[in-house]
Length: 568
Image 1 (cartoon, one colour):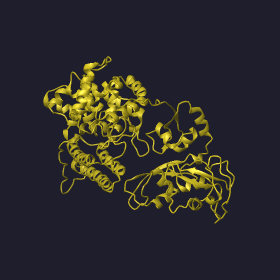
Image 2: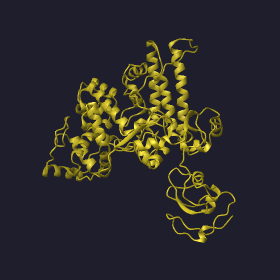
Image 3: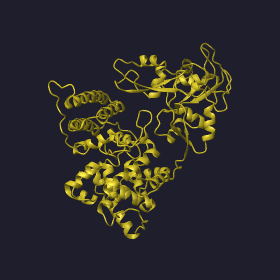
Image 4: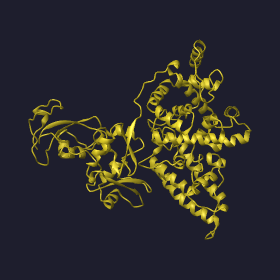
């Protein structure tokens, strides 16, 4: 995992923001240690003095932090993360005089530690993609696992390839031996899952690592970081396959927003991870230290080296000069490199997955991702597999990924879609007193469309500072497929509910009414679930009589007059 904000670097152009970031993190407090207290403003602040300027920044940052803390207490973690980020950016974007930097640094460190403490208590809710492999301590492996590994190595010594870096073997390093026994024993099923997923992405990763000039072996750090999950999220708010936190991601030129988050883009994040590793190598000159710094932050590793006089990872680890997690992290990566050379040798089964191959098409306008899915013949979940970094819509002048070989047909089909159906989106930041109804009225759209696009669980709960994606357009609704065709009015069919469906949209597509759908299916609530089946009579509206006996469609199960229902 790339540690929060401490991994800043001066990017091209040496912007003030980047320079300030470096200045802020030369102290240990920025990496979670003790922080200097913020400067206190005098009783009567001077109009233009350094302290009054810092106090103004503190006031602004505190307002964001307060909103974030309130959202966190309510369980609105995405909003909280956004507010905390904005609070930190108040300092990162500040243009200060040299004499103000100490006060600015102290204020930043104080805020950072308050946020960081919340983060370690579980700022991010637990989900299937929450990373756990690297959060756990490397225990002494079971006697059985260790005995099995040693027996395998003694009976049939493994023939290792020629690595481009110095990879310690189990016979040379007890910590690597422990990691191997643990990952191929207690964690066997998890590692098999990660190795299988790696078959989808490794050709792309190795190509990028070669281009950047980073040893291919380091690509296997993603097995420990995320199990190669693009949607992985850690308790420290690091995201994606390469576990970037938002601050470092932005400093390396990645988009991090409510709709596009390039930390989960397997291609973009891989390139930035390789560049970051190369930057770390330029500073430390040792790949073990690069892995350690990637996990703990380069500032923490640099200070440990200065404090102890050691210049290699293993000495720092033996002296316990670096965090426990980092002492375990590097041996796990070396174990992953060894396992990856021959999983079968270690008793692991790897299932090959299709390679991550795609075409890219540059959008000339904001375009709903569901429209893209329909035009290439995929479901929304399938198009998200190609674009895990795009949540709902593709911004103008931004590429969307589609199946390889489909670009020409897709762009031709897209050109035929009326402008009204390629809905435009705007962003609204919730202010005090806002209601969903007022927001919808202001933008000339429907509340239901805002709820749908933002995947809101409670439409009545808005947080000050919350970012909402607002769908706007001539039809004032998010894109949905055009009404189905090929049915006669009154013809009965069975519809299988898809993820994201609503009764309103299903009724719209089949040219009927929600009340009819509920009556035909004996529903007392409008709630539906993916995979459920609904009886539908095409084209029946309002007071039109429902046919008593109709022939089922070829794809529908047989029906009888009894379950067809009677007229209203």
